[in-house]
Length: 424
Ligand code: ATP
Ligand code: MG
Image (cartoon, rainbow, N blue to C red; front, side, top):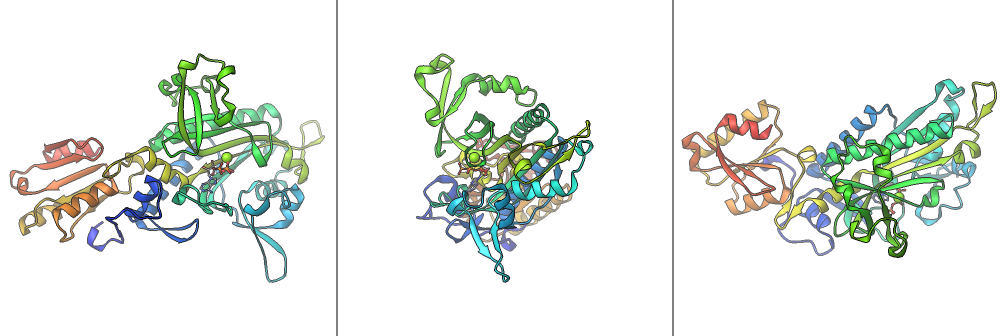
């Protein structure tokens, strides 16, 4: 991509309305635009990151055998009257009427819609177990939307729903998804801590929240520091769930099962939440399935959420410095930025060649071909936080490339082959 032709409106000033660093940086890096309170448009750079996160989440879900669907954002009130949640949900639910005066709502979550799909198609125990998931927009009329996309009113969520014959099966599904979530967050470039949680409005008897540690987190999280050393790609559910974790007031220093010097305390951003809730929806909504013994039964269910749009902000909270964002490779909007230290036709010609070569090699590159000052180009490139920068100046005559690691600031003069290796 050529910067001069891109839609990338960067800002030099810190916008007054943004209180937390991720919100400031997302606005300054031209990633989002607030359409109205708690409702955002995603501009090209932001949308690239959002899409990359979405893709990784979907790959990890598919890998454990979940099936992707897409359910409607608008739902009939009727389904929620069946489950008994229509009245309870309160003002966070956006309620509307269609032209026939039928009560509708913009979905804050999809247990009812998914249970309705299941009761239509799942008739026999032979069709179980199954897990359906989607990545789609939710609306919750938050009383205090804040921190940009961190707590929006409209937000992107991955939500999944499991259906099993019995409690054992349901708990297996739950454990499988907890482990998969931990691997997903590792791939995205952050470590999330699973914390046992109250299941709140959704109701149920087994629940974990996933927190990313960052100063601006809304919860206080306490956890066994040995969690930090775990290899989450190979850990078992027991390795994880036997470690002490607690959020907010659930941590009581007088009744803590491990020595207090082993407890790490940090602020956490909730990026995921999983529930096992048994037959709550299958019973109330009449999802009845024929069992092996010829008797009908109500499947055991769980639901599993990841805050996809919140993750963009949470990743920035976890990865930034005073100059801007430090994207983990896996979610960076581009891998490489080309910056001209000096501007003359010779250097431009080299830059064009380099840009073409990187493009041909399938390396996502942002070439800052603008006629701005070098200072502006440097600070914009640092702000948007691409992991690799290539700085072109007089050194092009020597046939070398000056490579800068955005995260460490380290610079090195590299041959073409050595450069390609760095960009891996
Ligand atoms: P919170 O406690 O932060 O309000 P929640 O517990 O109400 O969240 P869940 O119903 O567990 O949210 O939704 C699953 C995930 O969706 C959350 O873990 C969070 O990452 C994300 N999420 C929830 N509400 C919002 C929001 N208003 N804006 C952005 N993401 C959200
Ligand atoms: Mg939650």
